[in-house]
Length: 171
Image (cartoon, rainbow, N blue to C red; front, side):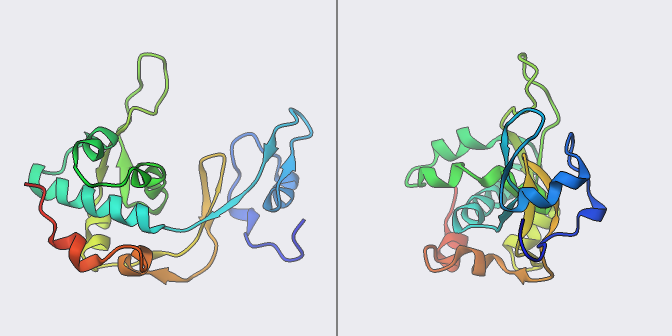
């Protein structure tokens, strides 16, 4: 267990996890019931995630505020690195995107349809900031790890040029 906890466990209870087991998950631990390894991960918005959000904002500006199959859309764009498709769905934990609440025939909720939220558009255009780090366990949002905030330009880092991405046209 970490010397000092990075997270206040009094305000959140992940599904199926005993409260006393949570502190062990900071460093990772095997479940005493099923033996499965679990860990609480600190996540930030990566450059690839920020790039994906910009593309989603541009899609919304052209097509309206609708749900669309994001991975198919990204694949249809030329010159877009495949790396942006990996983690963009985690942006839902910051309230920057929303997934469509519709199940597939096999019962999975992962249907690939998302839309950018008004907050996501504001973040893209510099009208708001986002929490720098969040805690996630088993794809569940546990909370914010600190009060630090970031802009989209900070998330893009040196790998991507914000001005260049914002001037790119979908047509």
